[in-house]
Amino acid sequence: MAKKKKATAVKLAESEIKDLENIRFTFSELTRMIGENEINITGLQGKKVELIESLNKLRKKQNDVVKELEDKYGKGKISLDTNEFTPTQE
Image (cartoon, rainbow, N blue to C red):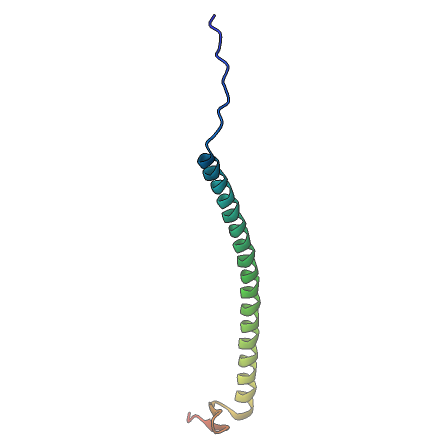
């Protein structure tokens, strides 16, 4: 049976160490930045949901006001420039 040769440790060159350290640092920074972006995305998604809910509430309020005005004045057009209601001819 042949004896296995014992591996001998070799010192890395300074440039090789710097390359490996740069890779490790850059990997760490990129991972951190991805995490921060994911947190921001989550916050933006939550804000988007809130804004959509607000928009839906505003649309409902608009429909309620239009219904009230139609019940009071009938069908027609409203001008916010002149603050006048003009009934439509049926």
